[in-house]
Image (cartoon, rainbow, N blue to C red):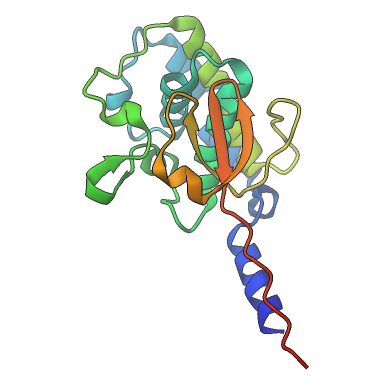
Length: 198
């Protein structure tokens, strides 16, 4: 019984987006007007857009996956939004994107690489804004499901890296997806509790 209680408690901490449904929040955060405002900017500076949820997510998709197409951007978006829903990470999009962890290290390398965070590829920016809006709707509205590479992924997809690196942390996680150059992970399943001997 104790194992079942622990399992249910853990499951409740990772409720899918549908359980946290708020279509009004999705509309507010990613409205057509908000999208149009971002698309009207000439060379947006992501560093100056740290307080706008749609802009923060679009900047993350642009800088992390602009050469990866829709599915690569959506994988980055899914991980970002899953972090928003996870108790292990901040609960706001911009705070997740700009988060620092141990020794002040950035969670997303582009936010701390010493380069200007300007958007210089208008087509990729348009795709990033559109995909960010879809990912926000996917997160808050149970009637929207953004498919990635033909699949749906759950709320436990919380980490990724590109195939050009193999971070130490990845060996402790379960590989869940490979989309373009990105490899995504979830926490490994807990081993089942041993039944008491009789």
